[in-house]
Each structure stands twice: as C-alpha cells, then as structure tokens.
Image 1 (spheres, rainbow, N blue to C red):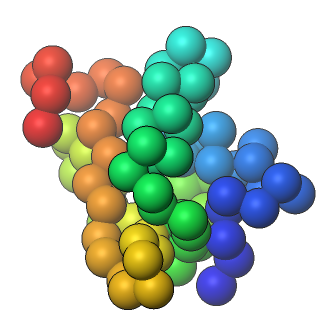
Image 2 (image 1 turned 180 degrees about the vertical axis):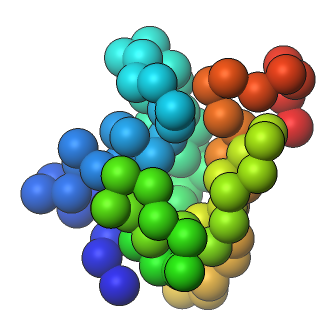
Length: 88
C-alpha cells in the first residue's frame, strides 16, 4: 500500500483529491482539511483504479479510499469536483 501523503506520491494525491479535473484551490482546501482532521496516511489500495491509483470505490458523487487516523484504518469518501451536490 502506497501512502499518497508521502512527498514522492503527492502528484497522485492531487489527482485523487480533485477528481476528475485538477484544481489548485480545491486541492489546497482539501489538503488543509486532511491535515486539520489529523489524517496521517491516504493509501492507494483497492480494486478500482483511477489515474493508476487504487481506491475502494467510485460513484457519481464521490470516491472512497483507505486512510489512517490515529493508528486505525478508516474509509474516506471524497466528493468529486463534478458532483451534483455542494457537500456530502
């Protein structure tokens, strides 16, 4: 499992957090939110692939990926930038 928060994987994380179209402002905002929530790992893990990143699931409103928070694993749902909703 690759940790996308590692510096060498940040380009992949940019694509994941702003799927399907990259936007710098959205990326910055979502990175701040991840750090505020104290999420220390976002993993490339799962059977679904987008941009060569493995995730747990992909829907019309969001993507689901594996994260680590305080030594425990959780799933994180990331709203797509083209979602028809303003929030989750």
